[in-house]
Image (cartoon, rainbow, N blue to C red):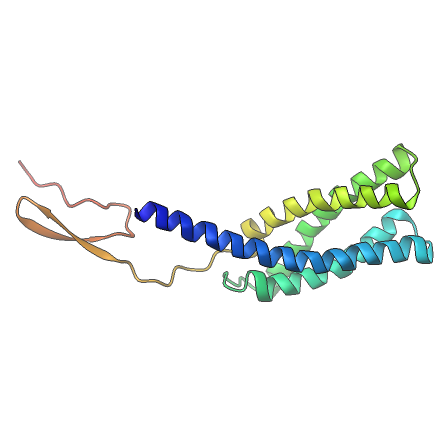
Amino acid sequence: MEFLRHAYRRLAELARELAKFGTIGAVAFVIDTGGTNLLRFGIGWGPLTSKVIATIIAATFAYLGNRYWTFRHREQSGLAREYSLFFILNAIGLLISLLVIGFVTYTLGLQDPLSYNIAMLTGTALGTLFRFWSYKKWVFLPGADVSPPTASKSQVNGHVYLLNKSSEENSPPTLPR
């Protein structure tokens, strides 16, 4: 039964994080997509330059939103460390997107707004999957368990032992025969 409760708590926590991550991501997506299209088709910048500039702006927003809302309960390992890792991982996510955009634009020769946006959305989706996994693994680390270990009693051959449930050894000491 304890296993099911633990699994439910973990699933509920993951669902909350995903919902918050998705909300921040949706706003960052609007900044990124709107900014990219504005720079690409409004101002006339190149397809890759437009994506890089808009992504830097969206990533800055996303960092602040994820640090202070989505993953605020996780350990804070230093702003400089988190910020650096966050942007390195975002650069990898951006590279995924640029590869898709570059393939569609330069290899396939499709330069119309629809093709560009489909390529951008595909790259963004693939990059987002990478970023969610990598942020949890390397940027926003799990917080220390603040709950004290719980104890239970066990009885072996008439002797009562106090067991620490959080320890690796959850069994009473072996009695000599």
